[in-house]
Image (cartoon, rainbow, N blue to C red):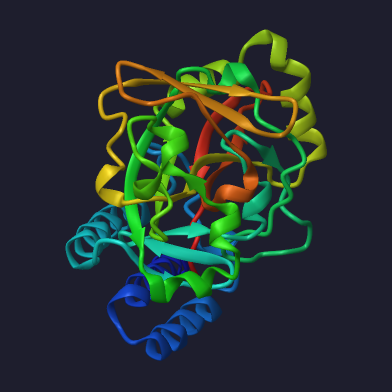
Length: 299
């Protein structure tokens, strides 16, 4: 009975996410609140084991089947673009991303969850910046989404101040194309989490791993960010097929350079990050990073 209740809890919470983009805003909020109440907190609703691990045959099989069906249904029903904007999260292409403390969330930053909290998305404090070796060339652009003019005020930030002009990224653009008053979000993410974990487990980072494991409450690392850019989204494919390299600078910015595409070297700070995704860092008995458990960003 307990296993079936846990499965029902997971399904209820996931359905709350799907409804957020598919129903009217008021109905979505009610459904999401009911789902959150039935689950109690994020720890109760999360799957606690990595892909492939077994934690009760019947429940494990049921969760895998149900999760696959939910993901398939969500993917088919979700509208492209930003379908929901809340104080602490947004939904982009049917998937939730956290906005909590986003202006401190550079790609690769990590830190603890606030103690005695069980919020969805989790309330995080990014106390440590990214490491050059963890970024390097293990990064890529994801998709891009246009921010509709009626959505801008919902972000509660000054777009003209926080956005990166597209002309700074692609030198071939004219000033008129860059400062058009239109904005879009571009996703920047790790190309391979396996490669990231391999870097994190190098002997020279042993002290850092021990610090995360022993002195941080449920530590997370930022695995993708949504960066605000001013310009026409039609020109957002400026580095399709190219190779990126990220370099952490002392002034709190990340320099982005590339080869094989028409892109200048440009920089972004946390001020340009509108939302992000994190992975909970899970350690094995030896203190090495075993896997990154993705956070659910929405209620």
